[in-house]
Length: 187
Image (tube, rainbow, N blue to C red; front, side, top):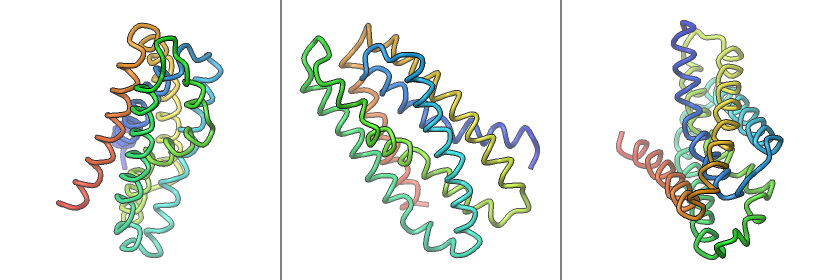
């Protein structure tokens, strides 16, 4: 696989994490740079690990992973997105309740939900002659940078658009989950 193809794959795999972290940054209202970097690191590490898991599973039993990954992604992203919308609607105008979105569990669930497509890519890469470690590192680094940037962009959006940005982020996660499900069920 050429370096350009790896770069395009890495960027493609990190778009959903960027969207999720932008919504998270908006929901947290003024997250610190350290918190943005922590979020980027969590997203990046998980996004780097999942293609390795997918590759290993693809080598062992690709049909089993491919049969359920879209349902898991849909469930996780739908639940996290729905929770974001719910809390945005419940929160007062001063941002009451935003602390709930600082939960490590919410961060991990979002990171796993947005990285399941990278696991599916890892499964497909198991059938090609590629260096999976290089690809996984590229995906992880791109995701870390884009997620950190997304948190900081969400930070700016949150101070201006608050609830609306959080609702949009939640709906985007639900949409990503539904898109993954539809793509797998229809083709």
